[in-house]
Structure formats: structure tokens, C-alpha cells
Length: 109
Image (cartoon, rainbow, N blue to C red; front, top):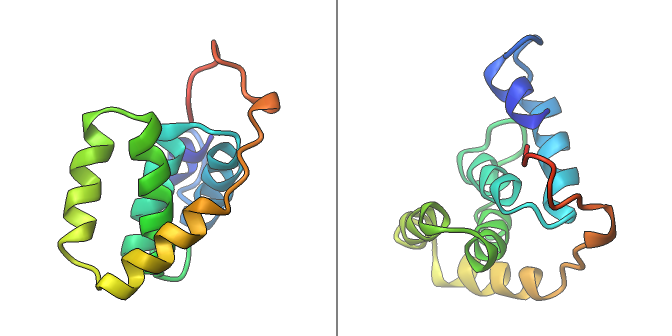
């Protein structure tokens, strides 16, 4: 649903609503949603820009995702401060993913 709201696919474009859907899926351990949420925080789309929060989510996505997340992580690292990276690492360490709600066969948002 997050991508539908972000791109306006069958629903009105709404980055704030997209961020809420990505947030929910990200907390359930979906790497794609974590990566999308990272970019939203990095760019300030649908949420207030927060480099540390962006780094938190891209760290989590890159641990569970593929090369896309790693590439995005490198781009974010090149553009944020060491302080924001350290804060993002601290925040990532405190994230508790609720995988009990995750359906491994369901398509990721």
C-alpha cells in the first residue's frame, strides 16, 4: 500500500500516508519498506527530513536486503555527517522488529 500512495497508483498521491504504510511494514521486517522509508527520511518526503532516521532504516534494510539497499546506504553515507551515522546506528540497535506479523509469502509493500 505504501508504494500505491507514494506513486498514486489507484489512490490519490499521498506521501504522508505512504510513510505510515512503510513505517508499519518496516517494523515488521520488510527490507523494501525499510529502504523506502530511509529514502523518505533522507529526502524529507511525507516525513520531516532526518538523516539519522534515514540511516537507521537503510542500515536495517541493507542487513536484510540486496544490493539496492547497499547502494542506497553508500549514497546516504556520502551525504550525512558522522554524528548522524552514529545516531542512526544507535537507533537501529534499538529497533525491535515484529516478524510475527510478517507473511513471508506476501509481496512486500
